[in-house]
Length: 362
Ligand SMILES: Nc1ncnc2c1ncn2[C@@H]1O[C@H](COP(=O)(O)OP(=O)(O)OP(=O)(O)O)[C@@H](O)[C@H]1O
Image (cartoon, rainbow, N blue to C red; front, side):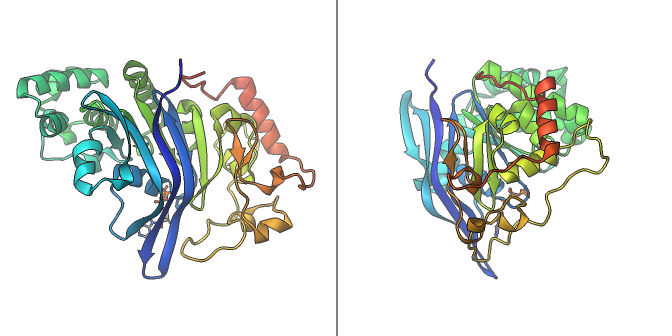
């Protein structure tokens, strides 16, 4: 079956006005999301993941400015398929047609997205009532079905409960039900499980996958945790200093990573079989994005840096039709190099255990 593109981001470039001058948060990124598929955006804190998805939702803070780029979204408008650059939409248009309705988002901490003074039922029904003027009875019935879908037992009873009656995992399920209430095409999950304990985390990820199988929704995960990525994503985008430095299928990123930054992220992933008890962390810190940069921003932290890295930032270079990495190591003049031995071992172990989930498209 042909894949249908839902979102196409081109050359997205975002800066912020700050007291220290202009901060270049996102520097010309391209992203594609297809119907029913899951992409992950992964990178350390400050790499530009949240700013990117906030631009998609139209909720950038006031000092933020989209300098360039397009976010082309394909959706059904009165039963006609249209593709629109939603960056041209007004705030009002975004609220009315996109945000929370066709593109919904769930955040890290369910408590911040739930209203403590409002019953669960009213919170799940709210979007349907405001966006679609759904009659009360219909909204109620759909809310009960949604609570069932997200695995809440006794949904009719739960409709009357308040957030503080529920555990963290249950609250996150409610947040997911609220996000799904208007039948969105795209669900953006911002570190949806970081605030939860490990067993609940796995259940929530499984729940989102299950909903995806039932509804055909497309999902964007943003996370710093490659463990989450392995479980859920079809495609991975690795971000560093506001750019995508490597992108590929989940198998390509885990089994054949090309960028030294991706190597670092893989090595820093907790793994029960790692011999040393000390967890690896990438040396140094991400650059200050308010400062002018020359060369590759990863250069000072890169044990594999070449002379050219100091002067010139590499573009994404092709590895396969679906796999690209922005590293001079892929250029014709690159000297021979070998991957860190520990990484080679780890990749072999992952292959042996098939730790990487095979996404719904494979
Ligand atoms: N409102 C703002 N004003 C100024 N700078 C901002 C603002 N919001 C984000 N930034 C900056 O933009 C850059 C990218 O931030 P962003 O929040 O997207 O990173 P992130 O990868 O999502 O990190 P985290 O995982 O911590 O959320 C950072 O340097 C951050 O300080």
